[in-house]
Image (cartoon, rainbow, N blue to C red; front, side, top):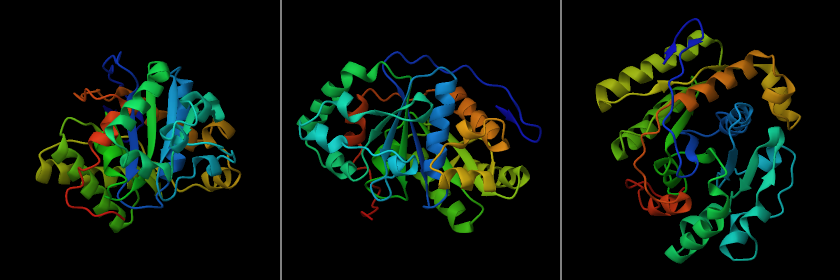
Amino acid sequence: MQKLGNNVFKIAKPDTNNKGPQVCTVTSGKGGVGKTNLSINVAIALKKMRKKVLLLDADVHLGNIDLFLGIHSKYNISDIIQGEKEIDEVIFKGPGDIDILPASSAVIDLLEAEDKIARRLNLAFARSEKEYDYMIVDSGAGLSKTVLPFVLGADKVIIVVTSDPASIADAYGMIKIVKNFNDSIPVLLVPNRVENRQEGESIYRKMKLMVQRFLNSQITYGGTLNEEPLIEETVKQQKAVILEHPGSNAARTLKVIAKNLYGLPNNSDNQYKLFERFIANRNQSFGVENE
């Protein structure tokens, strides 16, 4: 648990996971909050902690991890679904030695796939699944049918929020859906693009009180990322700030977020294989229509 105010952290020992990677979905209630940047940098931070990491680009509308990093991905999950490529031909090496599995528009193919396709994907991934400790899923934003399967199928969820009232309201809506679906899924809240740490901690405290009072549940503080020109500069350069400026405040905070994610208990009782769990949750829309 984090001790707010002085950046002192006591990292809990996570549960051992021998069945495959822990699936951690990064999402938000509202777009444009810095979700992809966080996904990439946290994945690299986990790799620096000597974890084997796979990053999945699952944002159907704004899937852009390869563009974000200035890397051209020739194939994606659709090529696996169609049986044209093996999964090791689709996964490519990203910065910081992380593996990246591009999906983006292919997410629709995945979520509409028949059970036999899920089995094909599971079989394809079974050869390499146990090689990874973590799978970081950069999902879309909002409460659509292309987002919720990846959120509800996760072992842990990171929700990115800004000080914008709409972002806060939408983030709470996402937390509500996650907790109503499975209260044991740990949620890590990360305030982003705020003026200072105190503002981020204030957002967390307010969200925590709302979740306790109205959902009778808990969320965890991940760490606050301030609005910094350095982050914007590295984004424009198609670089990861944690690699380009490892001694910066932003890089230190990203490492703390990764450690807090690592420290969350893996309470999931999800027995599905990796891609089965996404497809199994594709109808869990809670009445939300497609975007």
